Image (cartoon, rainbow, N blue to C red; front, side, top):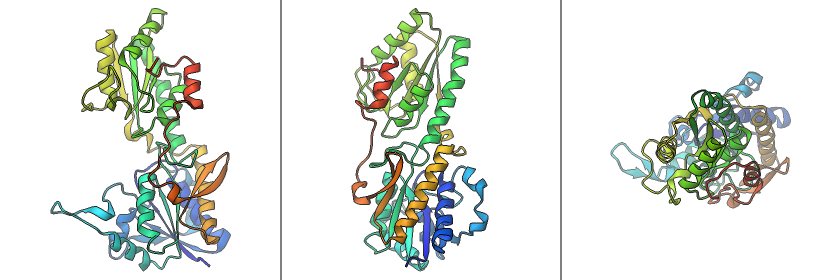
Amino acid sequence: MTKRIGILTSGGDCAGLNAVIRAVALRAHHGHGWTTVGIERGTLGLLDRPVRARTLDPARLDAALARAGGTFLGSTNRGNPFAFPMPDGSTRDRSAEIVDGARSLDLDGLVGVGGDGSLAILRRLFVPAGIAFVGIPKTIDNDVARTERALGYGTAVAIATEALDRLHPTGLSHERVMVLEVMGRDAGHIAIAAGIAGGADVVLIPEVPWRLDRVAAHIARGRAAGRTTALVVVAEAAGQSDAPGATGDAPPRGVGEWLASLIAKTTGFEVRATVLGHVQRGAAPTAEDRLLAAALGTRAVDLLAEGRHDRMVAWWNRQVIDVPLDKIVGRSRAVDPLGTLVHTARGLGICLGDV
Protein backbone atom coordinates (compact mmCIF):
# COMPACT_ATOMS: atom_id res chain seq x y z
CA MET A 1 0.00 0.00 0.00
CA THR A 2 1.38 3.38 -0.99
CA LYS A 3 1.92 5.53 2.10
CA ARG A 4 4.35 8.28 1.16
CA ILE A 5 4.00 10.13 -2.12
CA GLY A 6 5.77 13.04 -3.71
CA ILE A 7 4.58 15.86 -5.93
CA LEU A 8 6.47 18.27 -8.16
CA THR A 9 5.55 20.94 -10.67
CA SER A 10 7.58 21.10 -13.86
CA GLY A 11 7.77 23.41 -16.86
CA GLY A 12 6.31 26.89 -17.08
CA ASP A 13 4.14 28.22 -14.27
CA CYS A 14 0.43 28.81 -14.63
CA ALA A 15 -2.66 29.43 -12.53
CA GLY A 16 -3.99 26.40 -10.65
CA LEU A 17 -0.70 24.78 -9.63
CA ASN A 18 -1.06 25.62 -5.94
CA ALA A 19 -4.64 24.37 -6.06
CA VAL A 20 -3.59 21.01 -7.48
CA ILE A 21 -0.76 20.59 -4.97
CA ARG A 22 -3.29 21.24 -2.24
CA ALA A 23 -5.76 18.75 -3.73
CA VAL A 24 -3.15 15.99 -3.93
CA ALA A 25 -1.99 16.52 -0.34
CA LEU A 26 -5.51 16.73 1.09
CA ARG A 27 -6.73 13.64 -0.77
CA ALA A 28 -3.66 11.70 0.31
CA HIS A 29 -4.21 12.70 3.94
CA HIS A 30 -7.98 12.57 4.30
CA GLY A 31 -8.66 9.76 1.87
CA HIS A 32 -5.80 7.39 2.56
CA GLY A 33 -3.87 8.57 5.60
CA TRP A 34 -0.73 9.16 3.56
CA THR A 35 2.07 11.70 3.78
CA THR A 36 2.82 13.99 0.84
CA VAL A 37 6.29 15.36 0.15
CA GLY A 38 6.57 18.50 -1.98
CA ILE A 39 9.67 18.56 -4.18
CA GLU A 40 10.99 22.06 -4.77
CA ARG A 41 12.05 23.58 -8.10
CA GLY A 42 10.87 20.59 -10.11
CA THR A 43 13.61 18.18 -11.18
CA LEU A 44 16.27 20.70 -10.12
CA GLY A 45 15.32 20.08 -6.50
CA LEU A 46 16.14 16.39 -6.98
CA LEU A 47 19.66 17.29 -8.13
CA ASP A 48 20.50 19.07 -4.87
CA ARG A 49 22.08 17.19 -2.00
CA PRO A 50 20.30 17.00 0.28
CA VAL A 51 17.27 16.95 -1.98
CA ARG A 52 15.14 20.09 -1.74
CA ALA A 53 11.81 18.79 -0.46
CA ARG A 54 9.43 19.27 2.44
CA THR A 55 6.58 17.41 4.02
CA LEU A 56 3.29 19.13 3.28
CA ASP A 57 1.17 19.78 6.36
CA PRO A 58 -2.54 19.48 5.45
CA ALA A 59 -3.45 21.88 8.26
CA ARG A 60 -1.57 24.66 6.46
CA LEU A 61 -3.05 24.01 3.03
CA ASP A 62 -6.09 26.25 3.43
CA ALA A 63 -8.39 27.76 0.82
CA ALA A 64 -6.13 30.79 0.40
CA LEU A 65 -3.55 28.54 -1.23
CA ALA A 66 -6.04 27.44 -3.88
CA ARG A 67 -6.58 31.09 -4.80
CA ALA A 68 -2.88 31.87 -5.20
CA GLY A 69 -1.21 31.95 -8.61
CA GLY A 70 2.07 30.27 -9.44
CA THR A 71 3.50 27.34 -7.49
CA PHE A 72 4.87 27.67 -3.99
CA LEU A 73 7.08 24.65 -4.62
CA GLY A 74 8.75 26.35 -7.57
CA SER A 75 9.30 24.94 -11.03
CA THR A 76 11.80 24.84 -13.87
CA ASN A 77 11.58 24.77 -17.65
CA ARG A 78 15.34 24.69 -18.20
CA GLY A 79 17.94 21.97 -18.10
CA ASN A 80 16.98 18.75 -19.88
CA PRO A 81 18.14 16.07 -17.38
CA PHE A 82 19.45 13.92 -20.23
CA ALA A 83 21.54 16.77 -21.67
CA PHE A 84 21.97 19.09 -18.71
CA PRO A 85 23.90 22.32 -19.44
CA MET A 86 27.10 22.59 -17.43
CA PRO A 87 29.03 25.78 -16.50
CA ASP A 88 31.75 25.07 -19.07
CA GLY A 89 29.21 24.95 -21.90
CA SER A 90 29.12 21.19 -22.19
CA THR A 91 26.11 18.97 -21.48
CA ARG A 92 25.88 15.92 -19.25
CA ASP A 93 23.31 13.22 -18.61
CA ARG A 94 22.22 13.79 -15.02
CA SER A 95 19.09 11.65 -15.14
CA ALA A 96 20.54 9.04 -12.76
CA GLU A 97 21.18 11.75 -10.16
CA ILE A 98 17.55 12.86 -10.35
CA VAL A 99 16.30 9.30 -9.95
CA ASP A 100 18.64 8.75 -6.99
CA GLY A 101 17.30 11.97 -5.47
CA ALA A 102 13.74 10.71 -5.77
CA ARG A 103 14.68 7.36 -4.27
CA SER A 104 16.34 9.07 -1.31
CA LEU A 105 12.92 10.40 -0.30
CA ASP A 106 11.59 6.84 0.16
CA LEU A 107 8.56 7.56 -1.97
CA ASP A 108 5.96 4.95 -2.82
CA GLY A 109 4.63 7.05 -5.67
CA LEU A 110 5.14 10.36 -7.45
CA VAL A 111 2.74 12.85 -9.01
CA GLY A 112 4.15 15.17 -11.67
CA VAL A 113 2.32 18.25 -12.93
CA GLY A 114 3.47 19.38 -16.36
CA GLY A 115 2.81 20.03 -20.02
CA ASP A 116 3.50 17.65 -22.87
CA GLY A 117 7.27 18.23 -22.81
CA SER A 118 7.59 17.98 -19.04
CA LEU A 119 5.44 14.86 -18.81
CA ALA A 120 7.56 13.19 -21.50
CA ILE A 121 10.75 13.91 -19.54
CA LEU A 122 9.26 12.87 -16.20
CA ARG A 123 7.99 9.60 -17.65
CA ARG A 124 11.37 8.88 -19.21
CA LEU A 125 13.02 9.51 -15.84
CA PHE A 126 10.80 7.63 -13.42
CA VAL A 127 8.91 4.86 -15.19
CA PRO A 128 12.01 2.85 -16.27
CA ALA A 129 13.34 3.31 -12.71
CA GLY A 130 10.30 1.54 -11.29
CA ILE A 131 8.92 4.61 -9.53
CA ALA A 132 5.11 4.67 -9.65
CA PHE A 133 4.38 7.85 -11.59
CA VAL A 134 1.10 9.63 -12.42
CA GLY A 135 0.93 12.81 -14.49
CA ILE A 136 -1.42 15.81 -14.28
CA PRO A 137 -1.68 18.04 -17.38
CA LYS A 138 -1.05 21.75 -17.07
CA THR A 139 -0.35 24.32 -19.72
CA ILE A 140 -1.99 27.58 -20.68
CA ASP A 141 -1.62 26.49 -24.32
CA ASN A 142 -4.08 23.61 -23.68
CA ASP A 143 -2.26 21.44 -26.22
CA VAL A 144 -1.74 18.27 -24.16
CA ALA A 145 -3.15 15.28 -26.01
CA ARG A 146 -6.12 13.24 -24.75
CA THR A 147 -7.54 15.92 -22.44
CA GLU A 148 -10.07 18.65 -23.19
CA ARG A 149 -8.68 20.92 -20.49
CA ALA A 150 -5.27 21.46 -18.91
CA LEU A 151 -4.64 23.48 -15.76
CA GLY A 152 -4.05 27.16 -16.43
CA TYR A 153 -5.86 27.39 -19.76
CA GLY A 154 -9.16 28.70 -18.40
CA THR A 155 -7.45 31.47 -16.48
CA ALA A 156 -5.29 32.45 -19.46
CA VAL A 157 -8.38 32.75 -21.67
CA ALA A 158 -10.13 34.86 -19.03
CA ILE A 159 -7.14 37.23 -18.86
CA ALA A 160 -6.92 37.54 -22.65
CA THR A 161 -10.66 38.21 -22.86
CA GLU A 162 -10.39 40.92 -20.21
CA ALA A 163 -7.55 42.49 -22.17
CA LEU A 164 -9.77 42.67 -25.25
CA ASP A 165 -12.52 44.24 -23.13
CA ARG A 166 -10.05 46.92 -22.11
CA LEU A 167 -8.52 47.47 -25.55
CA HIS A 168 -11.82 48.01 -27.31
CA PRO A 169 -12.73 51.38 -25.72
CA THR A 170 -9.25 52.83 -26.23
CA GLY A 171 -9.36 51.71 -29.84
CA LEU A 172 -12.71 53.45 -30.24
CA SER A 173 -11.44 56.61 -28.59
CA HIS A 174 -8.52 56.99 -30.98
CA GLU A 175 -9.86 55.18 -34.06
CA ARG A 176 -7.07 52.64 -33.92
CA VAL A 177 -6.67 49.00 -34.83
CA MET A 178 -5.68 47.16 -31.65
CA VAL A 179 -3.54 44.01 -31.98
CA LEU A 180 -3.33 41.65 -29.01
CA GLU A 181 -0.60 39.00 -28.98
CA VAL A 182 -1.36 36.02 -26.75
CA MET A 183 0.68 32.97 -25.90
CA GLY A 184 0.39 29.80 -27.95
CA ARG A 185 3.78 28.33 -28.74
CA ASP A 186 2.39 25.67 -31.09
CA ALA A 187 -1.39 25.99 -30.83
CA GLY A 188 -4.01 28.71 -31.05
CA HIS A 189 -6.44 27.62 -28.31
CA ILE A 190 -6.10 30.82 -26.25
CA ALA A 191 -6.40 33.07 -29.30
CA ILE A 192 -9.52 31.47 -30.77
CA ALA A 193 -11.35 31.17 -27.44
CA ALA A 194 -10.52 34.70 -26.25
CA GLY A 195 -11.20 36.12 -29.69
CA ILE A 196 -14.72 34.73 -29.71
CA ALA A 197 -15.42 35.72 -26.10
CA GLY A 198 -13.92 39.19 -26.50
CA GLY A 199 -15.60 40.07 -29.80
CA ALA A 200 -12.47 40.19 -31.95
CA ASP A 201 -12.69 41.10 -35.63
CA VAL A 202 -9.68 39.03 -36.63
CA VAL A 203 -8.11 35.94 -35.03
CA LEU A 204 -4.88 34.47 -36.38
CA ILE A 205 -3.75 31.02 -35.25
CA PRO A 206 -1.01 28.67 -36.48
CA GLU A 207 -3.53 25.99 -37.48
CA VAL A 208 -5.13 28.18 -40.17
CA PRO A 209 -2.73 29.63 -42.78
CA TRP A 210 -3.57 33.27 -43.32
CA ARG A 211 -2.92 36.02 -45.82
CA LEU A 212 -2.16 39.60 -44.88
CA ASP A 213 -4.16 41.00 -47.78
CA ARG A 214 -7.28 39.23 -46.54
CA VAL A 215 -6.78 40.52 -43.01
CA ALA A 216 -6.28 44.05 -44.32
CA ALA A 217 -9.34 43.80 -46.58
CA HIS A 218 -11.53 42.64 -43.68
CA ILE A 219 -10.40 45.57 -41.52
CA ALA A 220 -10.93 48.00 -44.41
CA ARG A 221 -14.47 46.70 -44.99
CA GLY A 222 -15.27 47.32 -41.35
CA ARG A 223 -13.91 50.85 -41.58
CA ALA A 224 -15.96 51.51 -44.72
CA ALA A 225 -19.06 50.29 -42.89
CA GLY A 226 -18.50 52.88 -40.17
CA ARG A 227 -16.48 50.91 -37.62
CA THR A 228 -13.70 53.12 -36.30
CA THR A 229 -11.71 50.37 -34.58
CA ALA A 230 -10.86 46.70 -34.99
CA LEU A 231 -9.62 44.07 -32.56
CA VAL A 232 -7.03 41.60 -33.83
CA VAL A 233 -5.91 38.61 -31.75
CA VAL A 234 -2.81 36.70 -32.81
CA ALA A 235 -1.24 33.61 -31.24
CA GLU A 236 2.51 33.98 -30.80
CA ALA A 237 3.21 31.20 -33.33
CA ALA A 238 0.73 32.35 -35.96
CA GLY A 239 2.96 34.84 -37.73
CA GLN A 240 6.04 32.68 -37.97
CA SER A 241 4.73 30.43 -40.72
CA ASP A 242 5.09 30.98 -44.45
CA ALA A 243 1.55 32.23 -44.85
CA PRO A 244 1.13 34.01 -48.22
CA GLY A 245 1.45 37.74 -47.74
CA ALA A 246 3.20 37.37 -44.40
CA THR A 247 6.47 35.69 -45.27
CA GLY A 248 9.87 36.56 -43.89
CA ASP A 249 12.07 35.94 -40.93
CA ALA A 250 10.64 35.41 -37.47
CA PRO A 251 9.74 38.85 -36.08
CA PRO A 252 12.52 40.01 -33.72
CA ARG A 253 10.16 41.88 -31.37
CA GLY A 254 7.37 39.34 -31.40
CA VAL A 255 4.54 38.63 -33.75
CA GLY A 256 2.25 41.31 -32.29
CA GLU A 257 4.50 44.25 -33.08
CA TRP A 258 5.41 42.71 -36.42
CA LEU A 259 1.78 42.20 -37.39
CA ALA A 260 0.82 45.70 -36.25
CA SER A 261 3.47 47.23 -38.52
CA LEU A 262 2.30 45.10 -41.47
CA ILE A 263 -1.34 46.14 -40.99
CA ALA A 264 -0.39 49.80 -40.65
CA LYS A 265 1.68 49.74 -43.85
CA THR A 266 -0.99 47.87 -45.78
CA THR A 267 -4.07 49.80 -44.64
CA GLY A 268 -2.73 53.20 -43.63
CA PHE A 269 -4.64 52.96 -40.36
CA GLU A 270 -3.14 53.72 -36.98
CA VAL A 271 -2.32 50.46 -35.20
CA ARG A 272 -1.14 49.61 -31.69
CA ALA A 273 0.10 46.27 -30.37
CA THR A 274 -0.20 44.83 -26.87
CA VAL A 275 1.71 41.74 -25.78
CA LEU A 276 0.23 39.94 -22.76
CA GLY A 277 3.19 37.62 -22.26
CA HIS A 278 3.55 36.28 -18.73
CA VAL A 279 0.53 38.25 -17.54
CA GLN A 280 -1.45 35.22 -18.75
CA ARG A 281 0.39 32.93 -16.33
CA GLY A 282 0.46 34.76 -13.05
CA ALA A 283 -3.11 35.44 -12.01
CA ALA A 284 -5.24 33.86 -9.34
CA PRO A 285 -6.93 30.84 -10.95
CA THR A 286 -10.52 31.11 -12.08
CA ALA A 287 -13.17 28.93 -10.46
CA GLU A 288 -12.91 26.64 -13.49
CA ASP A 289 -9.20 26.04 -12.94
CA ARG A 290 -9.68 25.52 -9.20
CA LEU A 291 -12.36 22.92 -9.83
CA LEU A 292 -10.20 21.21 -12.44
CA ALA A 293 -7.23 21.16 -10.05
CA ALA A 294 -9.34 19.58 -7.32
CA ALA A 295 -10.76 16.91 -9.60
CA LEU A 296 -7.47 15.98 -11.29
CA GLY A 297 -5.46 16.04 -8.06
CA THR A 298 -7.93 13.81 -6.25
CA ARG A 299 -8.01 11.26 -9.07
CA ALA A 300 -4.22 11.18 -9.38
CA VAL A 301 -3.88 10.08 -5.75
CA ASP A 302 -6.62 7.49 -6.16
CA LEU A 303 -4.79 5.99 -9.14
CA LEU A 304 -1.74 5.42 -6.96
CA ALA A 305 -3.96 3.85 -4.32
CA GLU A 306 -5.33 1.47 -6.95
CA GLY A 307 -1.81 0.48 -7.98
CA ARG A 308 -2.23 2.09 -11.41
CA HIS A 309 0.57 4.25 -12.70
CA ASP A 310 2.37 5.34 -15.86
CA ARG A 311 -0.87 7.19 -16.56
CA MET A 312 -2.14 10.75 -16.86
CA VAL A 313 -5.41 12.01 -15.41
CA ALA A 314 -7.48 13.99 -17.89
CA TRP A 315 -10.73 15.90 -18.29
CA TRP A 316 -12.99 14.44 -20.95
CA ASN A 317 -16.72 14.76 -21.56
CA ARG A 318 -17.26 16.54 -18.22
CA GLN A 319 -15.56 13.89 -16.12
CA VAL A 320 -12.09 12.81 -15.00
CA ILE A 321 -10.58 9.87 -16.83
CA ASP A 322 -7.07 8.45 -16.99
CA VAL A 323 -5.05 7.56 -20.06
CA PRO A 324 -1.71 5.77 -20.60
CA LEU A 325 1.19 8.19 -20.65
CA ASP A 326 2.60 6.51 -23.74
CA LYS A 327 -0.45 7.84 -25.58
CA ILE A 328 0.51 11.38 -24.55
CA VAL A 329 4.25 11.51 -25.16
CA GLY A 330 5.16 12.88 -28.57
CA ARG A 331 1.62 14.02 -29.29
CA SER A 332 -0.19 17.32 -28.96
CA ARG A 333 -3.69 18.69 -29.42
CA ALA A 334 -3.92 21.63 -31.80
CA VAL A 335 -7.02 23.63 -32.68
CA ASP A 336 -9.13 21.66 -35.13
CA PRO A 337 -9.54 23.84 -38.25
CA LEU A 338 -12.89 22.11 -38.82
CA GLY A 339 -13.91 22.07 -35.16
CA THR A 340 -16.54 23.90 -33.15
CA LEU A 341 -14.54 26.99 -32.19
CA VAL A 342 -13.33 27.71 -35.70
CA HIS A 343 -16.84 27.12 -37.05
CA THR A 344 -18.23 29.46 -34.39
CA ALA A 345 -15.71 32.18 -35.18
CA ARG A 346 -16.56 32.05 -38.86
CA GLY A 347 -20.27 32.07 -38.04
CA LEU A 348 -19.80 35.30 -36.10
CA GLY A 349 -18.02 36.96 -39.01
CA ILE A 350 -14.56 36.78 -37.42
CA CYS A 351 -11.82 36.79 -40.04
CA LEU A 352 -9.24 34.01 -39.73
CA GLY A 353 -7.20 35.40 -42.59
CA ASP A 354 -7.83 32.58 -45.04
CA VAL A 355 -10.99 33.67 -46.80
